[in-house]
Amino acid sequence: MKTILPLLTALLLAPLAVMQAGDAPKVSAAVENDVRLHADGKGWRLDQARITDPKRPRVLLIGDSILNGYLKRATALLDGKAYVDTWVNPYCQSEHFNKLLAEVLTNGPYDVVHFNMGLHGWQEGRIKPGTFEPLTKAYVEVIKTKLPKAKLIWASSTPVTKEKQPAELEPDINPIIIEHNRMAAKVMAEMNVPVNDFYGLLVNKRELARGDRFHWTMPAYELLAKTLAESVLRELDKAKGITP
Image (cartoon, rainbow, N blue to C red; front, side, top):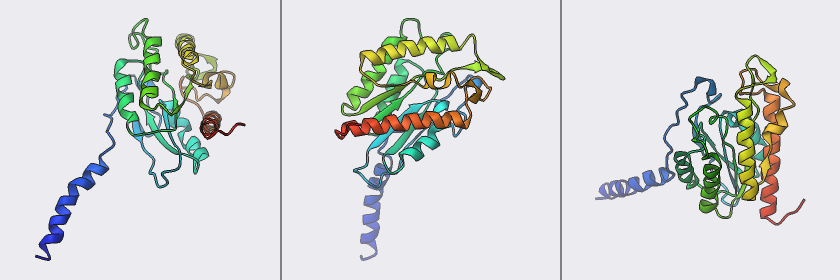
């Protein structure tokens, strides 16, 4: 009997342990069919920090392959100040993306959400005409509904340079990026969301571009990481009532 009781206890507790480990919803693996727009790192994924101090703030970073570039540095700058979850994805404005966003946010609550989407929506047909602003607004509304206490920060998309000639801007794609940034910035202004102008930070530093059109060298990513970390800490201070 003494042997049976511990065995029964283990059998009863096993499903509970599995349920706790799998509480966070899983997001299906993303696929990007345009080989030019690769993940440039560990791949498309949702990474979650291991929480040991429940009082420490939590931050969610959302972006594409550019986020992969500056993620390690940004996480280091926030180390000990906030737990950082990361959703690296290849999505652009769509109802499907907004639905996935709602699922990802159930991993919160988060104190700050820093988000960007833009380098995967310039191809014709990916975003239906006339839907960019409404879908972007709906995206922000998802965050505000799911996380009513969270601080939001939007980052504009980075410049697209000519392949192997990074000193020059890509003549076909970059104007679309500029227009998408303009429309997104309009939505953020209407919804009182602060902006990190990543485009403005790098457009005159094209010598830091890698030369594959979309990606950048480490000095550029360090600049983006520093800007992100400063803005996140600023919003966390505001939440605590601390003014600069």
